[in-house]
Amino acid sequence: MSEKHDVVLVRAAAAEVLTDAPGSLITLFADSAATGGKVTSNRATFEKGATGAPPHFHTRATEFFFGLEGELDVLVDDRVETLRQGDFLAVPAGTKHAFAPAAGSTADVLVFFTPGMDRFDYYRLLDRVNKGEASWQEIRESGEHYDNHYVESEAWQARSGR
Image 1 (cartoon, one colour):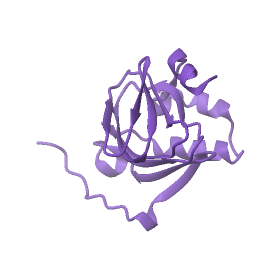
Image 2: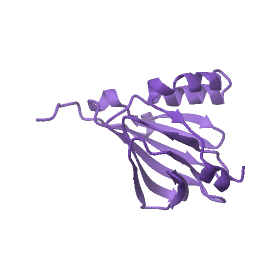
Image 3: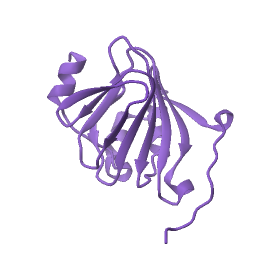
Image 4: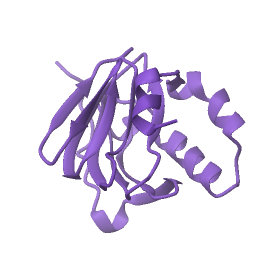
């Protein structure tokens, strides 16, 4: 029998909203501790031209994306998929991925991890970096703790024209 945990209800007005980069908001719903380790969830909202998340992978969780509005380019291994409203994508642990709004588009997506990962402090660290209160070195040093491992991707570089 599975472990019980409290029902989690996060009202929109009470959800913590962070700016992790220019043009990018993360709305925090439920971290691993709130769900008994079952799931972590947030909403990612991107303005046109936002940089999104660079190529990385996780070793301990599958990351799920559900498109609410707009178009989101997602790197999956060495190919780029575009998610639209109603599209769903599951990225297994160990799979290289990145995401950002498609050219000329905004994007609004629900993001879930299972099993749950303590990610909210990572998002708060990104918010502090965006505000100039923390450094990118702290992000690099936190990779193992937050299971966020940055990698290179020629396919993603070609997509972003860099």
